[in-house]
Amino acid sequence: MKRESDAGMTRRTWLFGTAAAGFGGMAFCARGEGQAKPDVRVKRTFAGTRNRYTFTHSLVQESVRMMVIGDAHLTLDDERGETWKSYSGRMSTPYRKMRHWRTGKEIISPAGFDEALETAQKSKVDFLALVGDIVSFPSEAGVDYVIDKLKKSGLNWMYISGNHDWHYEGLPGSLKDLRDEWAPKRLGPLYQGANPLYAMRKVKGVRMVMIDDSTWEILPEQLAFLREQIASGEPLALFMHIPLYVRGYPPGVAQVGDPSWGWDSDHGWQVERRPRWPKTGHTEITRAFRDAVFSAPNMVGVFAGHVHCPMQAEENGIVQLCTDINASGAFLDVRFERGAS
Ligand SMILES: [Fe+2]
Image 1 (cartoon, protein in one colour):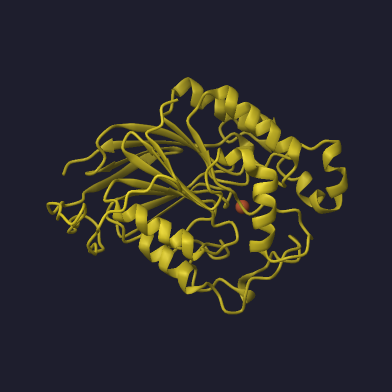
Image 2 (tube, protein in one colour):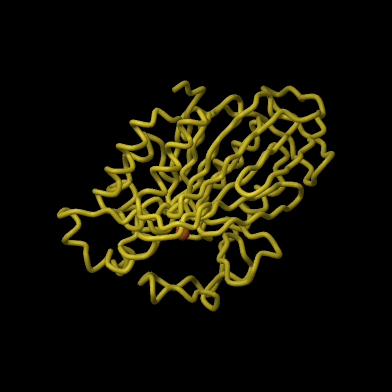
């Protein structure tokens, strides 16, 4: 599978002027080794139905077809997981048996994941984004299964973790410390050598940017990486597990950058046996990250999972889609098309 470039790793540093925020006619800025790029008016459109959506953007030069899979919630385990049973027990049951998202017939895990991969292969997608909670806990058997399937698929894929992939519920430690330990230790092969916290790969000229927001917070180096991607001036798409806050989402849907996120809004910490969200709410870095995403002229679209149902939102003309739960076989079928400039 051809890859134009991979990063956390390959980075060009562009000088970049400050982009004016807003949709449908914004000044788009200077870049290059000290050279100003001609002012470009960004135009975007967005349309779709069910799980199929098309985005146009005036910076997109070639058609891209991609699939987004999130929340497969595989519960596979074997004797290697025996030691961890007291930490994987609760999450080993849900989502094993579901109703198929399209037919309504019973579907048993991992059939939803397998079916989506087969569809991606048949559709010859240019890119497959796995946006987290692919496994319900970090069992070696689960990760082995996913890696084997992905390698055999021949697809051009990238993965970013959800809040469950690395979490054995009840282990002591902060969410950050647990992720730092368990993501590399158990999920390592899924990153294909990239940084687990942030990575980028170009596909037909579009920067596919993966950011791990599975602790509900963004780190300074992740914000810096995002800003670098935006400063490239090239079209980019962002993939995370937990969606970013957009005003108007239904209450109770935890989102990154939500002003009400924190101690009082955390109703899941006892069930999930993890530290309660902080009384201080989100960090400045997390809030700045959210604002940077929704004011980036070259942002084609934002993609997430976590909420287990299809959700759409828009801010500043930038659309965020959440994919339905893949344990039911669901996925997003997305096209990026060249737009009028
Ligand atoms: Fe999740």
